[in-house]
Image (cartoon, rainbow, N blue to C red; front, side, top):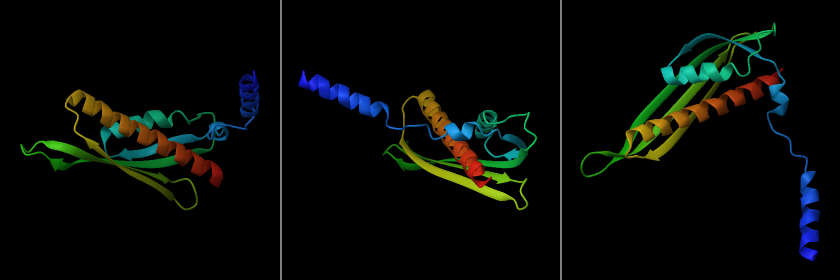
Length: 151
């Protein structure tokens, strides 16, 4: 009986802990991204275009012109005795150049991920796509937060 009362009491206190999502205030910011040029890795460029549409609002007259540059490099870190690659390094880089302000601002982000070889080539490609997609989503969120706080 005492344990149940303590659990109910803890549950009631945790219900009102004041949690709110980080991006809840920023999703209300209607930003219209106008992609002027995009260069680099084709797959990363396609993912970036799709994910930036999430924040775009065509009814907003204040559009932000953006130049985007993406880089993806996959390099071999180690090989086994047969000469087959056993671990890889995946370097992802994205640069956003904001052109609308009086002076252009550049936001650049990079990340390096180390991974071991996955025997199934399809699974390895899928894992790389997951890394790329997560990287781009996180960096676009950071860009939106930076633009929202700088206004």
